[in-house]
Amino acid sequence: MNNRICEILGIEKPIIQGPMSWLTNAEFVAAVSNAGGLGFLAATAGQVDRTPNRSPELTAERLRTEIQKTKTLTEKPFGTVIIGGSDLNYMWRMIETVIEEKVPVVLVNGLPGLPYEKIFKPLKDNNIKIVYRPLTPTIKDAKAAEALGIDIYVATGFDEGGTVPERVIGTFSIVPMIADAINIPVMAAGGIGDVRGVRAAFALGAEGVFAGSVFIPTKENPAAENVKQMIVDATAEDLLMFRTLPAYYRSLPTKLANKLVEMDNQGASREETSKFLFDGMRIGMLEGNTDDGYISVGTGITPIKEIITVKEVVDNLMQDFN
Image (cartoon, rainbow, N blue to C red; front, top):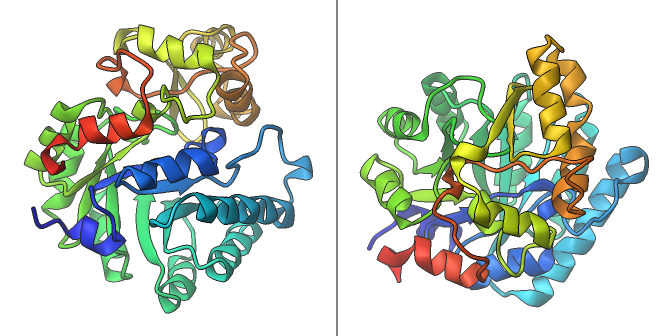
């Protein structure tokens, strides 16, 4: 099958593993790439504790270490995420690092107000492929990103885990809307838990899938074992949702997740609930502490029935490409 995403990224199967914050490291990402997909290192890849004072320099150097380690584990392409926010020093330091380390692909998470032309130029000048994933995909945003020369656009539906889009538009609706609006390849993200979701995404106009939750209960993923088992035992009906910055988050039931839902119901601001997010994911999903942490996954968890290898996940999702 001719596939533009495989050609652009130099991979065998059109699947990208989402850079799930604390839940990526060199071993896990290399396993995805070795299985034929594209693994992505998060900014906190390989870390088990919060970065002291979260300095841009220390964050970038920790990421550099994980990039170099990944290179020893796979000869296939992999990528790193470029994070933005109010302090753009983080983004510039990461851009410098990926250029110096010759990382072939980056994921740029789109946020309002970022200077995209300045961000994309050094990446394009160094032949780095750009996968662009906005917080909330829109037709206007997709056309603007295409005009700036991105390579692949990720259309994320409300079904996803992690930072849920601001607009309540499901993956089945957002994918064809974006695919019909632009000429570059579109990847579907949100709620994809088995090959049926992949086939549906392709039928709707996507040329690849961007998956996160399905990769957590794998043998190579650094998530705590009790968390992996909770995902296997759960369905989408078990998920809780609460308002936070920038929009919403989901979690399987934990003591902290129930507290955040209660805070939301009692009128707490998004700023108040967001104070628990950064460390809450590390504590819950990496350490397995379900009292003080939360477990963020998407609605596609229902078909996940056992803890398997990354290769088995890729092979199952990409049956039509095997």
